[in-house]
Amino acid sequence: SVPGHDASNRVEELAINLNKNLTAIAIVICLGSAEGFSLAEQAINTATKQGNWVLLKNVHLAPQWLKELEKKLHSLKPHESFRLFLSTEIHPKLPTSLLRMGLCLVFEPATGVRASLMRTLNEFSENRMERIPHIRTKAYFRLAWLHALVTEQSRIGVRP
Image 1 (cartoon, rainbow, N blue to C red):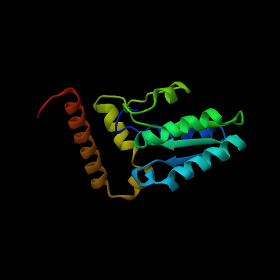
Image 2: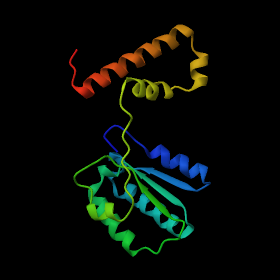
Image 3: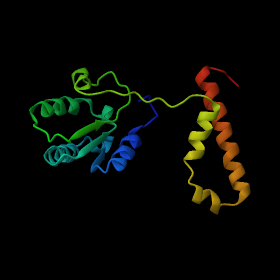
């Protein structure tokens, strides 16, 4: 995905819709330790035997480990239902041979003021919006509108 746009929630929704057991592990800077990677490898080993799904998030933060993962995947004999999903930002150090092993989808957020406004407003739950005073709801909308305008102007290069 493009920087700042995480589409891993689509994998999580798909797993729920298909009643699949999904193990989601976020690879973050603090998981750059050996124990963090062993946790990911353990999840993969379990899932390959049981036919579960594994989602590794933000793998662009660990390009060196991805080379080891690629070697491991070549040696596995996975269950036919096993699926491994990697969520990443576009990064020059991602192993191309690993990318060629699977199907790559690039998710980009829709552009435009309306799309940006809708993305921001969808972050608020209806329950939360109903509990706050109406004046604050208006303030949230105006702030979201301003954010959408500034974001769109910066995307197309317009300076205020």
